[in-house]
Length: 463
Image (cartoon, rainbow, N blue to C red; front, side):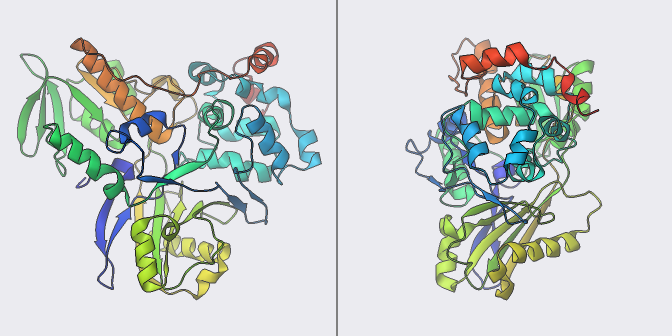
C-alpha cells in the first residue's frame, strides 16, 4: 500500500469543489479495553489526546426497537444482567424462553477453553441454543459477529463468546468507545511514522515483498522490486491474503505443516464503505455512530462531521454533513453499482432527512481482506511463533491464546512478535495487559464448571 495503517489507513482525495479531504477504509471504534493498542498510541501522545469519546453505542432495528449501552452498569456480571433487563428487545415471554444452562460457558471464558468447547459451533447455532429472541440477536449479538465481517452462520461461536467476555463479563469498560479526532493518518500513523524515523527506522511504502528465504549465513533474504536485502529477523505482519500469497512464493519458509496451515486461511466476504459529502446537515439529534439491523445490507451509519475535525470543518464551511455507511459480509456475487445505490437508499430509511440532500461527493471502497474465523478453524490458525525462531507473525488473524480481538489482537500480536525476537538477544520485551482470561466472578465460575454442558454439546442442542 502507498500509506500506513493497514485496515485503519487513510489517503488524500480531492472533492469536486476542489477541497482536499481524507478517505479511509471505514469507521473503527477504539474500545477502552484496547490496553495494548492504547499503550502503543501513548508513545506519541501520552494523554491520548488524539481520541475523543462518543457518548453511547446506539443500535436500531427497522422494527423500531432501539438499544444502547450508556445506561448499562459496567461492573460484571451486572453489565450482562443490565443489558437484558434494560433492553426493549427482551419481553417477558422472551425471558421465559431463554435457556440459561446453555449460556453457562459464557460465565467462565478462557481463550483456550472457550475454543475447545465452542469452536466447532457457529455463532448462529449457539444463539439458537440460548433461545435468544430474534430482535435481541439482531440488535446485540450479531453486532459482534458482523464486526468480524462475517455471516453468523460461518463465524465460530467461540469468537463471539470471547467478544462477550471481553466487553461484558471480563472488563468494566463496557461497550463505550473512543474515535480519533482527526483522520487516521493525521491522528495515528503520521505521528508513529515520525517517531520511527527519529529512531533511525526506514519506512518504505508501495514496496511489495516478493519472497522471503533463509540466508546462507543466518537471518533471511527479503526480495522486493528494489532488490534483495539481508535481515536478522522478519515479522510477517500481513493481511490474510498477503500472508497466504507471500508464503506461497517463499517455498523455504517454515515447514510443510506450518505452510499448509497458512494456505488454509480464508478471507471474510467483501465489505463496502460508502462516504458521502452532503449539501445539508443531518438532523441535530443524530448520533455520531449508529449500529443498524433489519435495513438490508446497511450495518451502521457514522456522522463523521459530529466528531472528526476535518469533516466538521468541511461541514461548517459548506453547511452540509459527512456521513459514512458500512455493509459487511456482502455476497461475492453482488453488483457494485447496485449495492452502492442500495446502501444510500437504506440511509434514507434510517435518516429520512437525507432524502432531500444532494450528494456533493461520494467515495466507495470495496475490500475483501479481513480474516474469516471459521467454525473449527482455531486450531489451524498461525501463532506468533513459527518453526523458524527468527520469523514471527503478527496481525488480527493470529492465534494469541489471549482474550483480545480485532485491532487489539493486531497490536497485542505485534508486541508478542517483538518480544519473541527480543528474547533471542536477551532483551526484555513489552509488558502486556488484557482483561482476565477467565470469568471475574468466582461463584459464577463455579456454577459454570458444575452445570455447563459438556464440550461439543453446543451444536447438539440445535440438531
